[in-house]
Image 1 (cartoon, rainbow, N blue to C red):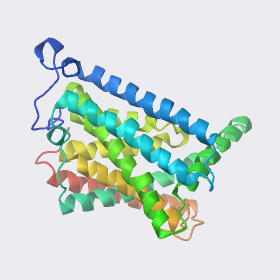
Image 2: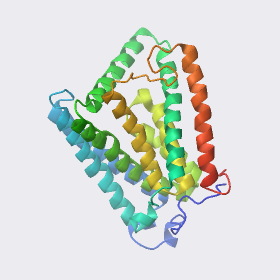
Image 3: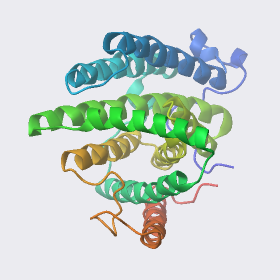
Length: 309
């Protein structure tokens, strides 16, 4: 049983619809409400906006059209994810600042979160290297290589900046806006609603799984789920969406910085020059797994008097 309600300070909206007043969204079962939000946003962003980008740019991201793609991505994130999430949240929960639990985080919360995110990235990097080393039948491997190459080239083109001003724009497009939009949707609205039916910790796990699947990147689904669950845990423990937003931003910012400073894609902290041996990769993963556990434990200590079950 969870020690903390999913979002204290706001009235519970779970229970039979007949026992709740208000508009139809407030009377709706929390799981049904979460499902409707996800379907609407998926349709708007992945179908409507996705098809628009596909038609406009013919599915290709090049150096010639990358700025237009970035603007399209930014506008799509705001109009198709952030605005609907805020609208659904307002209609369901009332005043958004209190409902979404937004407040300025404390210094030690930010430090613990940033350390944990960097450490988790290192562990997940080892997982991705292990995943890539698994032998597959030739035809399947060719298909996987094709998909991987497509995702990597597209993402690399989007995050690569050739000037400080372009780097700032990339950070806004790839790190800031996605963090704001996706955290408002997945942790602020979806996790909050699921938590009314399942409890806060289970909601963090469920919303994290949905977050990973929502990105439609099968090769990176495990790391995406891991990050999503961790972001959910942050909100569950701290009752502060701003911390998850900061963690999400930092995670994406590291990718932007790595591209700008020409760091190796498979950056391993113990071998920053590249060409890390399997033993170094394993040692790096073990070391940063311990760092992640330590940072997360420290975070849990000062965000609640009791550890959640």
